[in-house]
Length: 67
Ligand SMILES: [Zn+2]
Image (cartoon, rainbow, N blue to C red; front, top):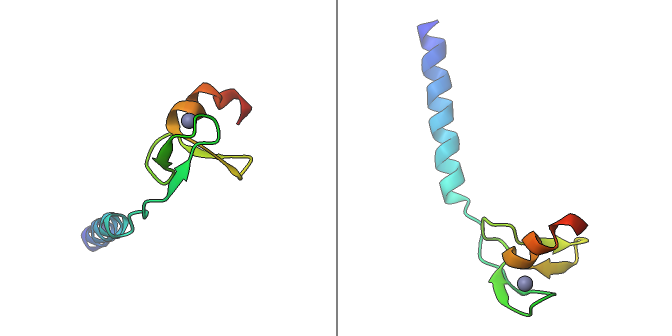
């Protein structure tokens, strides 16, 4: 039982490490709505509307209901 718990913890630690090394590279896009340049890979609301048109975080929130 104790050994099993140890293994579990070791695995969790490894996963956290992997996440840090696998940071998304910046990808600068021009917002389809406001023409502002932004990093679509940033950890915010920005996304591709219909998988095609880049929306910055602000416009993604504003037009969120179209998602
Ligand atoms: Zn925008």
